[in-house]
Amino acid sequence: MLEKTFCSSPWFHVRLTYDGSYESCRWGKNLQRNHKFQNETIMQYYNSGQMKLLRQQLLNGETPEHCATCYYEESYGKINGRRRQLAKSAIDTNDFLNTLRSSPHYEKFEYSYHNDGEANLAPVDLQIELGNICNSACIMCGPEASSKLERDYKKLFKINSTLFQNPNTPALWVNDPDLVDRFVNELIQIPNIRYIHFLGGETLYVDAFYTICEKLIQFDLAKNIIIGTTTNGTIFDKRIKNLIRHFKEFHLGISIESITNLNDYIRYPGKIDRILKNIKKFLGLRKNNPGLYTSLRITPNIFTVYEIDKLFEFMIENHVIAESCNILYRPKHLRMELLPEEIRNEIKQKIEKIINKYELNKTNIVNIRRSDMIDQVTANTILDYYKFICSYEIPDDIEESRHNLISFLKAFETIRKNSILDYAPRYEKFLRHYGY
Image (cartoon, rainbow, N blue to C red; front, side):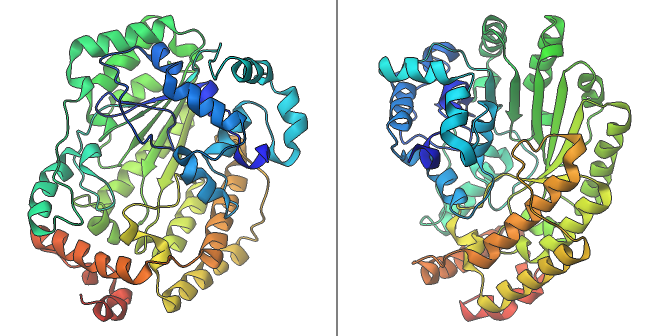
């Protein structure tokens, strides 16, 4: 049934990755990354064979492997990327056929159906990844997204070549001033760009981020564009204050899963005290900038989920949502689904206390970026994670993944001289059982 598989994203969205490769979606990953910004323009990729095939698959009710993450999350009732993109086409999965026919994009879908997946629109929603320059080396990240982790992986590969790849990060497109200029010129030529989300690395460290934003201001395009970006919270760059006021809206996401010193192990070498101070500074900018929307972007893992109740309390007390990026799937050995049952039950109980304390109820909200609906979005996030913790399926390879978790942690700790037991003592019995 189309209501369970169809997504409108390929009709208005394109993603440009760290090395200049194109992706069809911000949540998916193409099996072949053979389309490069260095060789073809955004508009050329938009109607490439890869994009046309994806549109055909979705129109025919197929479930492309590219979309597996969204289908997995939706199986647990989570508001996922597919639902968010459908909302941008005014399509509601609870009234799919009627809202599909009334969608402003319906004629565009029909055109693609009769023209082998070709689209006669232009992208209005871009995700642009500005290389891997980063001052953090989060254990769940990868060398393609962190220059600091790239250096670590060269050592980790020598320790365990099965769990860690030998990093071979290609040249970054943002390091070429000519490509940055070309990117800006392409933006100017694409009509009706509405949303651009920038990722790093650490975006606030990347000069190209400021260059592109300043060019959009210079060409008088900023007033019609929503800018989104994500920071790890370790720095507070005052240049952000000057950019915010020029754009229609500015969405600032802060990546965090723990507000205790467990953060310092997971998001090494960041220090949670400094991060919390910077978060408060960012939240303080909301007072004089009504177009600023700030959120915490969370992807809990097997360890940080144990303290997620404290993060939920922080959200509620500071009137800020935690935007769930996705359910962590890779690295497989950090997945929440590997929890021992005893700890899993404790997490359920802790989240239940939050639900009961604040009398939280589920509401049907897809557009989470509304300052007037923070409380409802917060409630949904908490209830979604509670449902997942209660109902996730145990992976078939759970024992292998748990043993890999130990090897994974030991490799990192060999080069960092730390121990997970100092940050997550509740897990000692579990970890020891698997050879820690």
